[in-house]
Image (tube, rainbow, N blue to C red):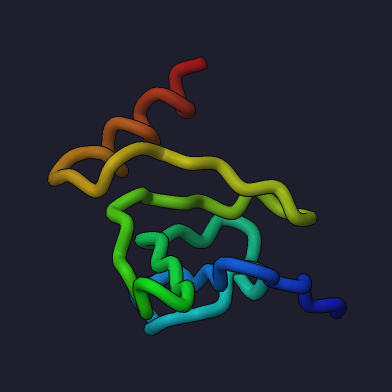
Length: 78
């Protein structure tokens, strides 16, 4: 598996199992986005990210109490 080249920002995702690099997420995994740069090392942005597979990611929304539940309900009733 190739890893992406990061020039300015480095992205990680905090999942239930721990912190993973952005490109290491598997299909169906989700977590909170963490960005690192030379000015802000490991800044937790507060966005929920879900991996849809094959390099495709979806931003669910802000990290709030019922954001994930709302996303799951919205996608199941489409």
